[in-house]
Amino acid sequence: MSVVAPPGYGKTTVLSQWAERNGQSFAWVSVDERDNDPKVLLTYVAEALNAVEPIDERVFDVLASPGSSVPGAIVPRLGAAFSSMTARVALILDDVHALRNRECQAALSVLADHVPGGSRLAMAGRLQPPLRLARLRAEGRILEIGPGDLSLDRDEASLLLRGADVVVGEDDVAELHRRTEGWPVGLYLAALYLREGGRLAGAAASFGGDDWLVSEYVEAEFLARISHRNRVFLTQTAVLERMCGPLCDAVLEADGSAGVLARLERSNLLLVPLDRRGQWYRYHHLFRDMLLAELQRLEPGLVPVLHRRAARWYERNGEPVEALGHWMKAGEADAAGRLVGALAFAAYQQGRVATAERWFGWLKDHGAAANQPTAAVLAAMISALTGKPGEAESWAEAAERAAAVASLPDGSASIQPWLALMRALMCRDGAEQMRADAELAAGTMAAGSFWRNSVTLYLGMAYLMAGDTGRADVLFEDVASGGHPGGPAVGVCVALAQRSLLAIARGDWEAAERHLSQARSLAREANLADYPPIAIVHAVAAR
Image (cartoon, helix red, strand yellow):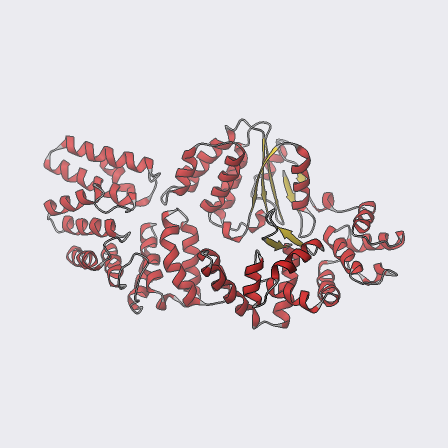
């Protein structure tokens, strides 16, 4: 099913009503900007399906792997899990227009081919969903719902107005319906305006029906008629994608926000509850856009201030990813860079490479690379490990120009061991300098650092390139034996592959086979088979 219409046509509402009355199991995913990472998006899809009927646990294993390919490994497994579900399920993806990432769009297109018999896939948004529509139409496999289907007729418009306790004459109803062309939110805003004190007589003549007029109407008429306190609350909290009382208190530097939210919800002021406890809310997307425009027009200098307050609240309450989003919107490059340095490695380990790269791109666009050595080192190493040498070199230069910092997420006392590790990975000046850099990193990095295995691996590579195969094999053995717990599995696979090659060189084919078998088994378990550094494992298998 495809539900496509401009804002305010009730796409989410019609799907919610379908869910309430259908009696089928529903798996619902509401898409937003943060889902423009295929692994983030598909994790939400998998969790929604799993809540209806447990799916293959290997789907979650491959989603959590940093090296798994979205089209080559994740989508096929998730599609197979979906198609094998025995429960009749309706999978709904709402606001899919927020997805601009092409890999996300391609993944959903393929997923549409795996809908099991008796189940449904519904996508709603402002733009056409990422589906092969022509083929689905030709096969009669898609129901398309558009603005014409969602527009209210005159009788429905009259019911909406009466349901909002607004009584006007039939001529006014007909004129309001004509001017709004049945646009549900336009009619609802008209009802709110009238209920808040608008003139009932001649109501139709005072209300505009196109998007621009509705926006102007809300700014000039509706917001002007509510209390000053509520107007300030609405406009200033519009910087938040979701709200609770304590967060609003922090942003407004005031008390009593929880009570204001409860009153606004009861007044149907386009406030959507996000839980059943009355704690978290969000504004209707269109209404929030209007409020933000109002805030930007009246107090543009206040917008970054409000985002800074929100960022501090989220940090104090243990939600650094939410805090990072607000630091970025406030344009605070130093604070954002600090959090990117703390969060990027974890995001990479969880397979959210696109998210980490988006953060790095923001720092670069805001000229923050020179002041953020931790983030720059991570960006350089992740770029190198994912096959982007140009980006890696650019970030490496930025990291080396940056000033030292006092502490790092792995417990190291300074940035120097990180820089040395990065130089060893880049191997710009040959094996001897690579060895020196790796030894410097090994001698100065925190004992429990998550880079420990990588340091040992690169040191072994340097000795190998210098011709000291005995020392190299000892170091590779240290990596493969788990001498430094917590290291990425990819390093262990590479170390085992190198040990296999060294065993072949000695003529010890039995040991070579043993090391290779361990590497291939680990690569399969960690879903690393198509991760670029694992190419050496396949090469050794060919040998």
